[in-house]
Length: 275
Length: 298
Image (cartoon, rainbow over all chains, first blue to last red; front, side, top):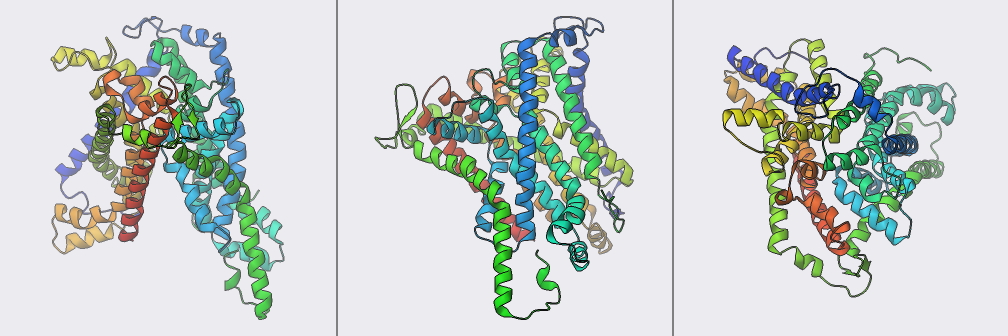
């Protein structure tokens, strides 16, 4: 990017912007940091500091319903991410690589709707549909619902990557007598891999985040971690919830840095690493 | 592949070309088919079902009965209680969007105008972390801060500004602002970062003041980011469920909670369907505005 020389016209304006920036960062981070710090407090009340302790983490790891919900969450996130990554990538390829096919425009529009629709509406829709076709609510209906919104997110991320791809690379493969599958496997796939991984990590995050849709389509015993924690919060605020929250934040953090590591654009002209 | 036609064609037989094109179209269709079928079955049809059931009547268990079609659920929208909830949700969503924009724009501008690329990258990561962090956890953080003896409550008491914030409308509002601010900042940052800043320089060289250059050049060029951010904040704010449920009370019910309640405690599915449909229509209008305006700026 070319750096603006006049953009920050006066020093004062820039200083005001900097102060504003710092305040916004404090607003974004102080609540989360306090939450993490208090998960290590020995007091059973969140209003006083009781000295450092891992007591709430120990308690959390002996809380069976909580651990069960954690297991459910992992299963839902992994299965829905796996399926939606394959389906979403195929959808992105179909939209970016083929000029015209039956129903392409409708599909393009349909693919964007799950992204912008509010969670509540999506959950209500799926709940009514599962009830109409007499499917009993269970872990399966949760997974099916998560796939329904994750396909779109994966497809959008992969599509962005495909759109920036130099088509001459595939042409070169074809000129060198690579068949369609070889060209895809050896050229296209490695090039769009960062997009696919990025999409998959986004899908994982969204799946691990979802409260509203899951709470509408869950069956008995199929609660996921966020829905379970949501129920706990509504009953009572305890440092144990802080401990669970810290674990959830840690998971988010791993996913952010994972996605940043994979999304990094290869330098212009440089060859991306071959498989 | 899209580029096949740009290659010198060795065969000029039109019949052959048509066949090749048809094969190409079939391939594209087949690749999309699994996700296409999935979205039809688990999205498009459920969408239609919601619409159909909003005209159904309700059985004793609250489930819709597919006979006796009526407009009762839609008539219910005009009851004062419902109208109040709809108005409150729209107002809060709009207020949140405007405030996120007012706070987020100068913030994104600050991020995008830092000179060192490495510094910008670090700041961007700092914005991405809350963006990716669990929404429920971030809302819970405020549940503690605003609670009895919470940090923010104590400060307010010491300064004599407020006595109790939790379960009030301001608490819901703080939660929404905190929850959705990153959704505004990221598209704004993307638009400002991609902008051609030499245009601002050109304006300045032509003796435009800093403010005029901003208003006439920077602001119009960042408009796609403004619109995208506004949509990303407005739509989920309108359907907010977690935030008002954790930070709000009985008097701060928003559309999201009210809809879910129709499927749980109130057991009135057709009415819940009608409400969901209203949210959908508002969302579609917002999206159409988005695409219209976006197209105009290009």
